[in-house]
Length: 249
Ligand SMILES: C[S@@+](CC[C@H](N)C(=O)[O-])C[C@H]1O[C@@H](n2cnc3c(N)ncnc32)[C@H](O)[C@@H]1O
Image (cartoon, rainbow, N blue to C red; front, side):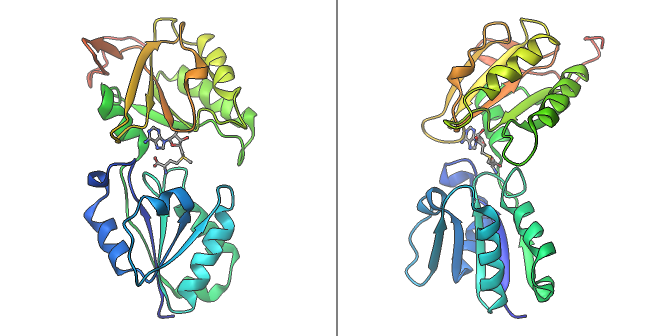
């Protein structure tokens, strides 16, 4: 098969945070496939076909990209942030596994991007300086019970926890429930950060504590970081020391 498929992440927002490798893949593409608002962030390119789709049709989008590449086109699939973090790369491989066996011979590549968690951490200082984990609070593709078990395990292990997809209009209660669960397992003065639109000119960081955290602050452009015991403030910055031995588990 002569077509190619590159799955890229365009970073959190600022053009400077898109990698040169992603920019080069986009410049070479005959077809760009992605969620409409992400495609709208890319500069126009007259000799390129764009295939915008809605949220929640990821598998359909992945199949379209694979069939375009199967027909000999040079396709780029676009995700926000990094394509492998709660995004299209895994969906493309899912479609590849279930789809036309001939697709497996395609030239497929994944280009990394700056994920929201890293952009959000940088806005606040260095909250991910020690061990950390990332959990999506969306229960569209997994059960809420699974999310609760992972939150409890992360709290027990004293990870810094980055919460993706903390809330949306369709899911306003999940961060409320997550904070309730974490409050039963972590100190009330644990640092909590709400970072909205990280890595964009509208970036906004609100620091608070787990005891006082108001879940309604989060929307679908917010990344929530819940600190470990060692996470602390210094002036307007928040960091987690790399040497955590001072805080006994
Ligand atoms: C479906 S996930 C996609 C994550 C993306 N692939 C990445 O690597 O950043 C969408 C979630 O990422 C977070 N997010 C994406 N961009 C963000 C930004 N600029 N600032 C803060 N959070 C962001 C939000 O929690 C949002 O609900």
